[in-house]
Structures are given as C-alpha cells and as structure tokens.
Image 1 (cartoon, chains in turn yellow, purple):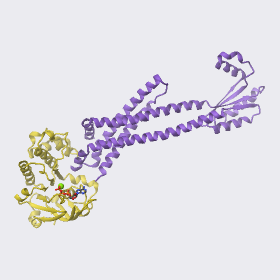
Image 2 (spheres, each protein chain N blue to C red):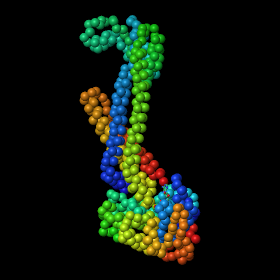
Image 3 (cartoon, rainbow over the protein chains, first blue to last red):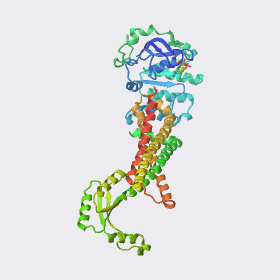
Image 4 (spheres, helix red, strand yellow):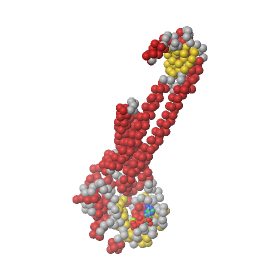
Length: 245
Length: 282
Ligand SMILES: Nc1ncnc2c1ncn2[C@@H]1O[C@H](COP(=O)(O)OP(=O)(O)OP(=O)(O)O)[C@@H](O)[C@H]1O
Ligand SMILES: [Mg+2]
C-alpha cells in the first residue's frame, strides 16, 4: 500500500534528508519509525501525504505514484490518509466536533452525513462527552484525541502520526498509544514516528530505524513480504496496490 | 457555496480588527481615488463648458446684401466641422451690447457695431487647427471684413485640456496601482493569519478551488464594503466643500456604482492573487 523505491530527498540546503530508502508497508500494519532528531522521519511522512516530492526514486501510496501524480490528484489521495502531529494542529476557534466536522465539510461530504460520522469517531476516541469543548478547554491528550478523530473521520487506509505523544506525559502517552492500537485493530494501518525508544522496545511491532537519512534497520523486512501477510482478512482487492509483490 | 459564505463570514467575526483594517484600507484608497476623480470630473466639465464657447465670428461689411449674407450662412452651415451658424444683425449686436453692459447703454449708438455671423463648432473640432481652417475658408468671402476667434485663448484652453487629461490618466493610474498594492498586502496579511486553517484544509484533502472560495468571497465583501464607505466619505467631503468652498457636481449614479464595484473587484482580485500565491507554495 505504501512503497518507497530507492527514494532520496534533498532539500535546497544541507545534507540529503533521505538517501536511497526502500521499504513497503502493507494494509493493516502497525509500524514504528524511529531514529535520532533530523534522521528523516518527518520527511518520510511528508512524502507519503505528498507535502513534498522525492528528489529521486519513487513513492507509491494507494496505487498513486509520486512520479506520475499531478498536483490535482493530491487532494483525493489525502482523503484516504489521516495525519496527526505532535502539536495537534486544531483550529482554536472551533469546538472538538467542529474541528472534526471541518475535515468532512471541506471535502464536500453531504451535510446530513456529517453529524452522525463526527459523533461516531468522537465516541471511538472516547471524547463524546467533550464534543462542544474548545481546544483550550481540553488537555493535551484530549486535544490529540480530537486530532486523531479528525484523521479517522474519512476512514483512511493509513494513519500517519508524527510524534503524536511528543508533548504528552507518560500516562497520557500510554492512553494515546492504546487508542492507536485500537485504530489499528479495526484494520487501519498506522505509521508512527517516535523518539520514545522505551515504547518501541517494549513492543514487538515492526520498526523502521533511520539515521542521517538512511534506513539502517527494518525489523519486518522479511516477514512482511510473506503471502499470508498480503492475504490477511480486510485487505480488499479494491485497495491492493498494483505493484504489490 | 453556502459553506464558503459561512467560512468567509467567520473570518470577519474571528479577526474583526484585521477585517476592519482591510476594509479601511480599501475605503481610503478608493476615497483618495474618488476625490481625485471628483476634481478631474469637475475640471473636465469646466473645460468642456469653456470649450463649448469656442466660436468663430466673422464681421460683415456694412451694406452687404441680405442675399449674400444668407448664402454665406448656408455655405458655412454645410461645413463638416460646423454645429450651428447664426446671423447677428447690426441691431441685434447693439441690443446685446446694451444688455450685457447695462449701465453704459448710452455709449452705444446704432451703426457702431457691425453685423456678423457666429459659427459654433462641433465637439471634436474645437482645436486650434480646425478653428483656423474654418476661419480660412471664411476669409474667401470678400464682404467679410474681419474674423476673430481668440487664437491665443483657443490654444490655451486646448493645451490645458491636453495636460489635464494626461495628468488625470497618469495620476489615476498611479493611485489605482498604489491602492492595489496596499490592498493586496492587507489581504496577504489576512491570509497569513489563516495559514493554519489553509494548512489543515489541504491536509484533510480539500481542493485548492475549495480553499480559494471563502477567501474570494471574503475579499469581495471587504472590497464592496470598502467601496461603500469610500463613496460615503467622498460624498460627505463633497457636501462639505460644496457648502464652504465651491459648488461642484457629484458622480452620477452610474459612476458611483462603478466605483463601488471597482472596490469589490479589487478585493476579489487581491484575494485571488494572494491566495493563489499562498497555495502555489508547495
Ligand atoms: N523544509 C525543509 N527545508 C530544508 N531542510 C529541511 C526541511 N525539512 C527538514 N529538513 C532537513 O531534513 C533533515 C531531516 O528532517 P526531518 O524533519 O525529516 O527529521 P526528523 O527525523 O523528523 O527529526 P525530528 O525527530 O527532530 O522531528 C534535517 O536535517 C532537516 O534539517
Ligand atoms: Mg520530525
């Protein structure tokens, strides 16, 4: 579903941010993206949601290739992805439910569908009781739940999380992480960039480790090319990548 | 569209100071433009009135037969440059002089003032060149004694009008340019203030076209409001000047509507350019 093939990224200044990175992520996987600051974690996520394009190589996401995709096709691709950040990126003048509804409104969802769908995801992230609270009336963990609800409301194929717990204390972190696991259990792939090595090591999840733009370790490189991974239930034929091995 | 309008109105509510600044900027730019336009309009109409008085007067030797005079009047009336020809007899000339200089009426005696024909020229033929050419053709008649058309005066008015037109156009252009620059930078500020919103919209997959909508409506409404305020300011100033300084004419309804719509258009274009630039950056 996500495939990087010899991808390099060079920003106008400095050393290469990514250097010959290849990996792929299947539907429904949970993957950690680790590495020291400046290793290129955020850059990988940006390449996936096409905030930027690779300098060389190819990034394929949900059947779209970074080589052939036009700017006009980007919005349609982003509707199939959910993205959350360390700083939540909520609109301060809108309530929790308005923030979530915003994602549906701006993608032209029929108004009658918006209310029920917003209520459903807010319940899923455990914030139904705070639907009408403004962001500044919510704790950091609650704000991140709103952001996750917004990312989920379009039923994405994959949730991209860039240090989603970076601003949160240990207990809140555990709660958010549990939520991401629940999301994953319902079939949504999760790609999570994190500094939290304790968290990564405590779990036997697939881990991609970057260092200075190079992919230095992929714990699941072998395992995830097996046939039973590709055929796991929930991987509908409509979303199967044309280039899946 | 409904949603776009709602988002546009939300911008007004959320950033009232910035919105007021945008409207004020547009209003004052258009106000300056309006005052300038008012001066140009009144100067233009004053000059046009003066120009209308341009006429060629040919004095007729006494004793010329009425038939000959009538023939000249007919001939001259068919010149393409000529709007009207009027014969003024000796008696009429005397009457007029007495009327215009009432207190000296005794000074005038019959026979002092010669008969004449007064030739008025069509619009567009009041320049020195045409005036001279018409008077040349009048000289041909040998019973015409003298021709006057105030050479110097005609040239002066004509030159003044040319200068006024050129100055008006270039000043107006500069004004419009400055207004557009100021307005688009206030709009750019408004967009920067909402860049977070734009970023999130893009992130969740809103199309550029969709993102643009509320900003265009926002710019249009601010421009429209600015235009109305400018019209009001101009009108108040006009009334004030009319009362204490000099009577003048105001814009007609059509010009006023055009001015307000120009404000709306500037707001719309300013928004389109700024948001386009902002969206282009990826
Ligand atoms: N927009 C940009 N322009 C120029 N250089 C950039 C840009 N974004 C990232 N970089 C550079 O690319 C490299 C990788 O950055 P990236 O943000 O991907 O790292 P990261 O692994 O997410 O780091 P962190 O853990 O601190 O978030 C860094 O050297 C960074 O300075
Ligand atoms: Mg980062």
